[in-house]
Amino acid sequence: MKDYPDRMTPEQARQFRDDVLNIVSQIPRGKVTTYGMIAALAGWPSHSRMVGRTLRYTPGAELLPCHRVVNQEGRTAPGWSRHRYLLEEEGVKFKANGHVDMSQYLWEPSVNME
Image (cartoon, rainbow, N blue to C red):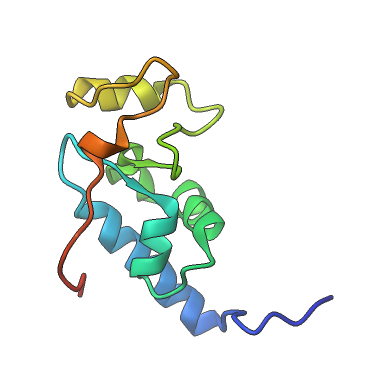
């Protein structure tokens, strides 16, 4: 197995999880952000897939506005049929290709997330 220089220790993984959940809890209604942006804000920019896994497998994460997280192109999560519905309920509009209009709805925090 390849040894990755950015491999997390168990403590770093716990901190990453806590940071991800904290960031997601702050996404405003009617806005979205990306898995990659959350990973970068948590200090691990190459771990966008881990953001998705964190949101999917952490007990209690379903109580957070996880539906406000999309991929960098504005696509919703495959296999989650309510994703688009929940965003539309908040006023988020989709383009003809089925992606969120990121130029209008992307949330980019300008301050440190601590």
